[in-house]
Length: 107
Image (cartoon, rainbow, N blue to C red; front, side, top):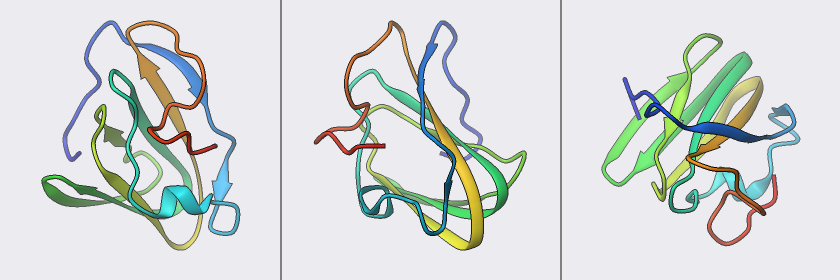
């Protein structure tokens, strides 16, 4: 979400490996959601990544220094715009177990 910030009091509990345009899991390229109470921050290390929220529809181009904030249960998807390297950090009010995504997308 554009101009979004994480609420205070959240704790980082998981971080993905660094993905590139070739290693990005297919599940993240299509519509997916985080679980209830789980926020995510998308960090681009190199290149550009399109971050699209679907409800309501908005789009943001992420690059180094421009992060994407994913709200809990928000339908979204990402698309590499050429060569890219990025990772995702997951946050919640308390530590979580298992996949941070609805449907158990593995990252």
